[in-house]
Amino acid sequence: MGVTPEQVKSWARDYDSHTPQAILECALAHCDNIALSFSGAEDVVLVDMLCKLSKKPNIFSLDTGRLHPETYQFLDTVRKHYGISLHLVSPDTQQLEAFTQQKGLFSFYEDGHKECCTVRKVAPLKRKLSTLSAWITGQRKDQSDDTRAQLAVAEVDSVFTGVEGGQLVKFNPLANWSSAQVWQYIRDNNVPFNPLHQKGFISIGCEPCTRPVLPNQHEREGRWWWEQADKKECGLHAGNIAPEQPKTVVFHVNYPVYNALI
Image (cartoon, rainbow, N blue to C red; front, side):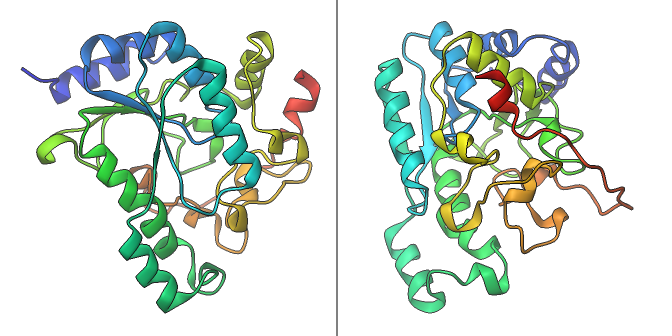
């Protein structure tokens, strides 16, 4: 018998105040066919935690073909540092070729990032998740003022499905952690990190769509800066997006967190 939605709701409630490690232990104990989605940014802390809990962690990363050179080097650093097999998931070749043939390489600056992200990120992720019953992400509530504010530590994925189109459980162990807590863990545990963080990058995605942020800017200001704030989800976590509500502008003094900690 598989995991029921009621069990997932119970975990979301009971583990909301628990440590990320406890949430990971819960995930591993109840879901055999589970993998960690590693973006090559601060969620490397989950790689470190998972490797301490499992001898053969299942970890994958989306290779969009447009990542920074530093990110590709960092992915290999993580693979060697932890002695793990890191599965790189790439876009479908025919779909990507058709898209670039029609739209070129920088169409997102003109008509938004959704179409490019669908080809390079969402479709490959959907393909990977269709082989799983559960997955782990590095999402945090403090990464957004609205779209991730209600993030639960465990949930039934409302966007993607798992094996044979069945239910997919999603764990967000870092949901209640702040950026400062993440970087404190990195420092305390000598966790390798993407060198782009030392150049002002906080939220790291594809090279054409990511830039450093300035003091008092929220980390998501460095992603798709030419678009409205409520459009800054790429589709990987589209279930985060709630109906539009009146917005209050909030400034965050969170840069550069890593300089103070490392």
